[in-house]
Length: 448
Ligand SMILES: Cc1ncc(COP(=O)(O)O)c(C=O)c1O
Image (cartoon, rainbow, N blue to C red; front, side, top):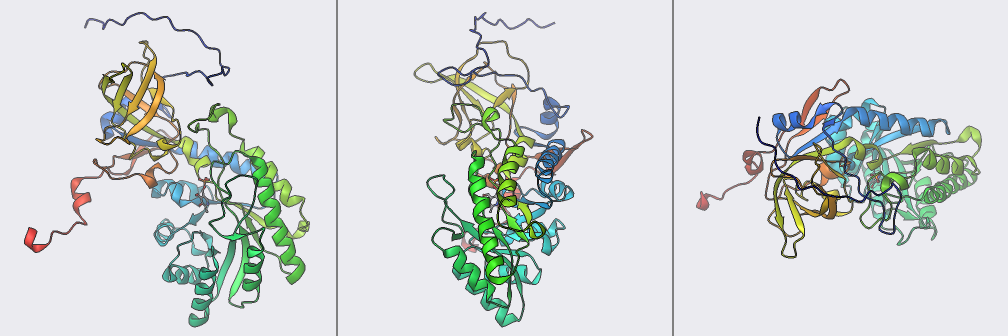
C-alpha cells in the first residue's frame, strides 16, 4: 500500500445556503460520473478535454418545455435553433422530439436538410441570406423570416423573375422594457416599420405572409418582456385580420429563455433566478389568449428556444495541468480546457466540479486554460480545492453555443461524445487532427 499524501488540516467556516453580502457561498461537490458513466472512464477512452452530452437531459428538457406550453395553449411547435448547437447528432435528438429547424445561414439550412428536416419545416431567420439561399428556401416552401426591406425586395424580385411564391414572415423588433433596445434585427414595431413591411407583403401576390416573428434577446430573465412582446405581435396579427380579413398561421416568439448558468457579476446563482418554463409559458400564452385574436383563429405558437434546452445537457471533462502561485501569492490552476473551447466562459461563471472529493484547502483560485494567450482565463477567481496535475474535473452547463462558437486556435478541437438513454457512449464528433486542419491549405509551387 502506498504512503498517503500528507494534507494539512484546515478549519473551514460553514456557510449556510443563504446569500451573504458577498453573494452565495461556493459549494464544491464532486462529479464522479455523468448519467451514470464514470468521468475517468470517459477520459481514458476518449481523451481530455472531452465534450460530453446527455441525451436523457435533452429529452427531459424538451418534455418539460412542451408540457409547460401545451398545458396552456393548443398549438405549440418547437423549432431547434441550429446556431445554439448544430452537431448533427444533437439536432437529430431535437428533431426526434418533434422540433422543426430554425436556421440563420445557407450553411445551417443545408445542415438541416441533411438532418432530414423537410423544407416546409425549416424557419429561415437572419439578416444575411444570399439570393441563392432565398430562392432555395422559397422553392422548398420554408418559412422565410424577412429581416429588412432590401431582403424583401430581393425576394420579391426572385419570386417575380422565377415565377415562384415564397412563404414569409417578418421579424419584428420592439421596446420590451429592456435597455439598450435590440433593434438591429427586423422591422420596428413602435415606429410603424413593421406595419409598413406587412402592407408591402400583403399586396404582393407572390409573397404569402404566414406568420410574425420576434426574438427579443438572449438570457432574458424577465417574463414580463415576453408578455409585452407577445402582446405586440398579437396586436399586429389582429390589425392584419381587421384590415385584410386574413389570419396569420403562427406567432414565433424566438428564443432567449435564461438558463441555470450564473452570469458574471450576478449576485445570485442562476439556479435560483432563472424563471421556470411554466412562468415563461404563462406570460406568453396569456398575452396571446387575452389579445383581440378570436379563439377559433388562434395562431400556432412557435418557440425557437436554444440555450435553455441544451446548456444543462452539456459538460466538458478536463484535466489539471499545473498549479502555481502568482507573484502576489494567489493560487492559479492551469487546466487543459481553453477559452477557445469554452466561449461561454466569457460571460458565465461556469461551475467546475472535481471528479473526486478533495479534502484539501479550499482557496481562492484563478483557473487558466492552456493557451499561451492572456485572454485564456476560465474563472478569474473561484473558491476551489487544491487539485494536482492529472486530477480531473467537469465543467457543467456548457451545452449551448460552445460547439458552434469554439475556435481552432493553438490546439485542435477534441472529441465530443453523447451518452444515450441506456448509458451507451457514442462518439459524435471526432477530435481534429493536423491533417484535418491542413486539408484546406494550399502551398504555392514556389514554397513547396
Ligand atoms: C432568431 C433566433 N432564434 C433563436 C435563438 C436562440 O436563442 P437562445 O439560445 O437564447 O434561446 C437565437 C439566438 O441568438 C436567434 O437569433
